[in-house]
Every structure is written in C-alpha cells, then in structure tokens.
Length: 159
Image (tube, rainbow, N blue to C red; front, side):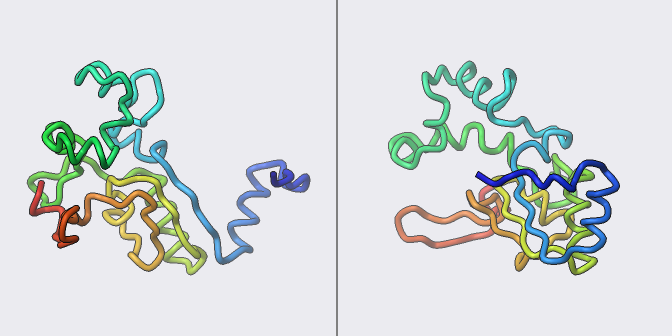
C-alpha cells in the first residue's frame, strides 16, 4: 500500500500540486456521475439494489455477466436503455458534472496524462475529453460489439 504524503494537508497544498504538476493520472468511477442522475452501483438505492428488486435477481451482478447475457440477452436490453445516456440532442438523458469538466480542464491545460474510468455512461466524452486521454475500463455505450462476429457499431444504432 502507498503511504500518505505527510506534506499534503490542505486544499491549498492540492491546488499547488495541480498548478505545478503535469502528467496527472485520474481514476474515476460511478461517483462522478451520480449528480448527473445516474445511480451508483452499491449504495442502498443503487443500481444493484434496483436490479435485485425489479428483476428478482438473487445476484444483481449477473446482469453484467457474459454467460448470463448469452442465455438471456433480453433481460440486459430491457434495462440498458434506461441508463444509456442518449446520443442526439433530442434523446440525451444525462449531462456531464462539474467533475467531468474539471478533468477536461486538466486536459486543456496539458496536465492530464490519462483518465481511467470504470464508467460506461460516455459523460467524459460528452464533456470533451479526447479518446487519446481516456481508457474506458469496462467499455462504454459509445460502441456496441457483436459477441459472435465482433462487428462494431456506434451505440446510437442500438439505442
């Protein structure tokens, strides 16, 4: 485990670091999209609780299991549209948060090395982050791939 930096004790210290450093690595997850209206996964009213209750799933993580998907893709598609952010101006459901724009500001100032995100919601892209600075660890709604032939299409075509 990494030891805490003992010389970083205030917001001003963080501001100084952001001002003076470059090649900043950002790790993000569901928490940065909650204020956009997208539920997190593990909280009391999060996505897993909703999936468990709504679809009567003993283990709500099965919704994202490939083997389960191959047996019953209709279950995934019955709810995926609800968390899909939308792609054109008439169908957009979710918008980037202040945190997404903060990460974009790091990029614009030449300080962002990379943003590794667990989020599939595409809000980083909508905020203006470049594909070169992003690693979507779990994929995203930006593209969809056929599990049989690996054909890819833009997410708008399956929305």
